[in-house]
Length: 193
Image 1 (cartoon, rainbow, N blue to C red):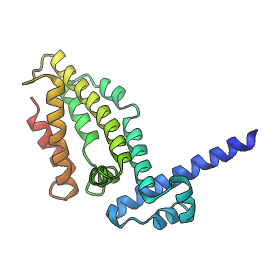
Image 2 (cartoon, rainbow, N blue to C red):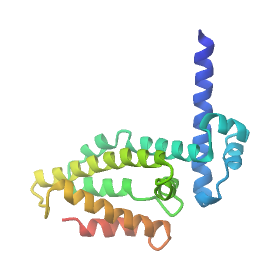
Image 3 (cartoon, rainbow, N blue to C red):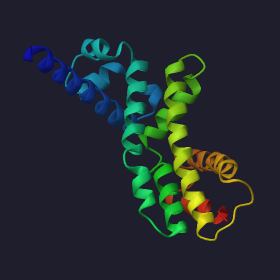
């Protein structure tokens, strides 16, 4: 019986190689220009191997964004909760949420996913789960703010929803190279109560 596990481990490693290669390719160029053959080559595999594991280029992109979001979410709540100062906690959330720069592969994938979500429900499914986790973490930050004496103009969940829309808009400007991630963070912190 060890052989099936060994094959499964190898398959998991190959899938991870393809996902990592896809994120590297997406950081290097526009998502629309990323070809499955280039992803596979960067992973040290043939295109047919990538197709075997993911079924299509879109399958690779969906898996890449799902993996990236899982990695971002891992331990995020605990890291945020460990920050006692409510303003510093919100600043840490904002920094984690916004793109690092105009080449951020996760954000580039999200834009691609939003555009394709009407025809590829897998993007939408990943997005809903990721949005829920981000929303829960932001609501937790805002509830911590109010528990320590801060005030909000409306309930935390309603404020969080509007604030995430604002952060999404800032992200667009980072990706368009209109502002830096640092400037976007400053704008975000300036509108918080």
